[in-house]
Image (cartoon, rainbow over all chains, first blue to last red; front, side, top):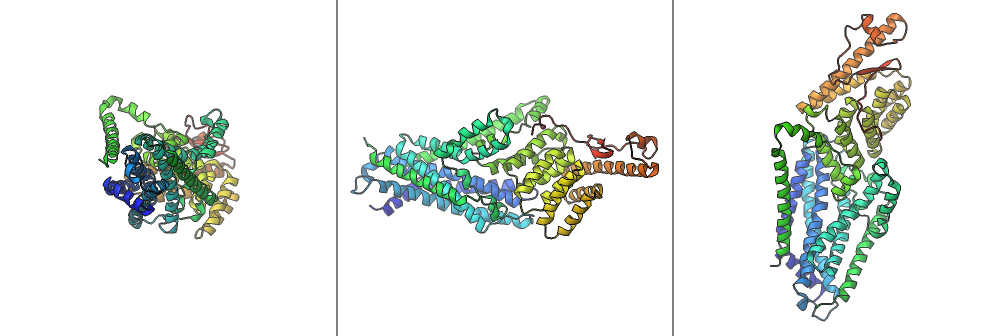
Length: 269
Length: 283
C-alpha cells in the first residue's frame, strides 16, 4: 500500500460517510446566509453578502474537518480497522499522512466550490446596484481564500493530532472547536481591550497574560485578510502577512510531526 | 455504520438549532402585551466588543455585520427611547470593523443629526482612518466639526484630507477648507441641502420620515440664525439673549424642534443641542 492508496481509501471512506450531501447542505446554508444578510444593507449589499458568506465558510468548514477527522482517523482505532491497515510492511505514518491529505483534499475542494458559488452570488447582487466602494472578486478574493486555506490546514493538523491521541472521537469535536475559538479570537480581544480600557480594572495585566497565548497558540486571526477583497484594496493587507503565514504553516507542520510521534508510540491493545 | 458519527453530529446540530428557534418563538409569544414593553427595553443591551469577538468564534466581521443589522432594524416608534442604544451599537460596529460603510452613513445621519454629534464624530474619525481611499468620511467629519462644534482647525484638517483623496471634488473641498479658515462657510444651507438630498434618495418610508424630522430641526436652526443676523444688523450690537429676538418682534415664537431636543445659545451663537446619553461620557 502506498500513500496514494491511503488517500484513495480516505476518500472512499468519506464518500460512505455522506461527505457529498453534507457539503451540499453546507453550501446551501452559506449561500442562503449571504443572500439574506445582503437584504439588511442599504449601501453595500454585495460587500455584506461576501462578508457574511466568508464568515459562514470559515465557521462551517471546520465542522467538515472535524467530521472527516473522526471518520477517517478516530474510527480507524475505534473499530480496530488498523488490524488490516497497519499490518502491511510499511511505516505507520503513511496511514496518517494519507488520511490527512485526503481530509485536506476534500475540504479544499468543498471550499473551492463554495468560493465559486459565493463569488457568483455576490457578483449577481453587485450588478443591481453600483456601490461607492465595490467588492473585488479577482486576485484579492483568491488571496483571501488562500489565507483561509492555511487557517484550515492548521485546524486539520490539530484535529489529526487529537484523533491520534484522544481515546474518544467526541474529544476531537470539542478540542478542535475550542482550539479554533481561542486561536482565532485571542489577538482580536487583546487589540480591542486596548480601546475599552474601562471594561476591566487591570487591563494591562489582563492583556499581558492573554498575550502569553502568543507563545502557545497560532494567531489564526491574523490570517483573516478579507478586507482586501471586501473593499478591493490591497493596501488593507497587514504588513506582516508573510510572517504570520510562515508562523501558522510552521505550527501546522509541527502539529503533524507531533501526531506522527504519538502514532509511532501508540500501543494498540 | 461508518456514517454513524456524521449522522449523529448533524442530527445534534439540527436539533440544537431547532431548539433555539423554538425557544425564540416561545419567548416572542409567551409575554402578555402589557409586559412586551419591558422586553423591548432589555433588548437594547450591547455586549462589549471583546466578548462579541469570542461569541462569534473570533470573527469580528461577523459580529460587526450582525450588530449593524440589529441597529438597522430599530423601529421609528422606539427611536427616542433607544437613542442611547443606537449610539452604543454604532460605536461597537465601528470598533469591530471601522470600514463598515452602512454603519458610518447611518451613524452620521442618525447620531450626528440626532443630537449625538460627539459619538457620531468618533465613528467618522475611525472610518476616515480605516477607509484610507474614501473622501466621504473625512468630508462628513470636517463638516460636523465645523457645524456642531465650531472646531475650525479640526474641520479644516479633515476637509484637507478629503481634498487630497478626491479626484472629482478636490477643488470644491479646497474652497470649502478656505471658507472654513475664514469662518465664512454657509454651513446651515449646506447641511440642509445634504439632508434634503439624503431624504430624496432614500426609498424606505420610515427612513424618509426620520430624515424629514432631522431636516425640520435644522430648518429651525436656520430660522434662529437668520433672525440673529437680522437683529444684529438692525441694532448694531451682538445678540445677548435669545429672548431679545422675541421681544424685538423679529420672531413671533421660537421654532419647534420635532425631535424635542431643542437648540442652545452658546458663545453668542445658536447651535443644535446635544443629547445627554447616560454612560457615554466615559469614552
